[in-house]
Picture 1: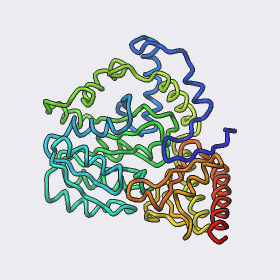
Picture 2: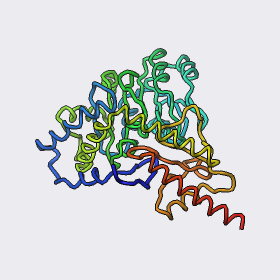
Picture 3: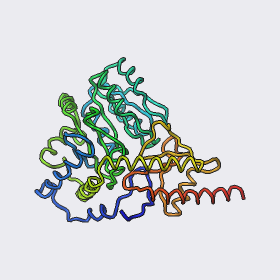
Picture 4: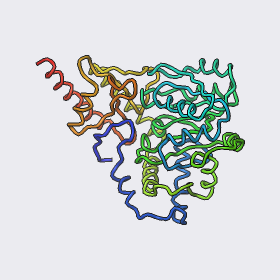
Length: 364
């Protein structure tokens, strides 16, 4: 790729010109034979990204819809939410709104969920489902999902529902090997497709539990998605240009190889860590559970994080501000999708220039 990236939000991520151009294909009818062919063409590459032999379904919305749908479709009474940041807490809020017994196993912001604490929690109460955020976008924490999922399987019959929105395509993820029942991800982060689509899995175990629920809603009924998926379609009219974009980007991911893509994201994280240490920036999150796709950082003393973000914007470089309770004193670099080392190095030069100018102003 020859494009230079100056856009480092932790989602949506930079979309290449090739993928943008794919969206200009003529619109086709969403119940037509050409659409069914397009839909079918997505299945095998999505399965390879998610590492599953099962179906990968598509919803036309933000990932929050499928977060809500997952609990509405499968939870009858009680659900345990593992929280360590704003997006995990959103799932908890959704369950409370729907009147479920929504319990919380929380880790401090910047820390990962402890598998042994999860084990102890599961021994005290029976749950229909456990929700886990694989990669917490607000804090840059990667939870030890393989260990957590193993604990759930060992200690309960609860479904394992996973938000892998900012990890899928950038962090190692093994849907089948880890025993995940529902995994969901918006396409706008490490997959590097524009926002508006959600890819998700839905295990046979989860389908059986959903079938025992009388009220699953309409747009939130995941069994309805299955019935349309089996006919090579979506439950409502989809954003067809985005499906062309996804098809094109999946070809690029296949060419790179998913394991090579994981490795590139690890290298992006390592490069960011080295630069941060050299420049006096500190990670807000635990060093032991750092995300390969998002770095949440505090600037050196005397440098305002919001002013740094604004200063970079004036130079046509985009990074993310802090999120939620960390908004005032952190900023986030999304090193995901199609970002390369040389793109990061250019960003780091600009950050150095902005902080130098801020230091001069403060000492003048």
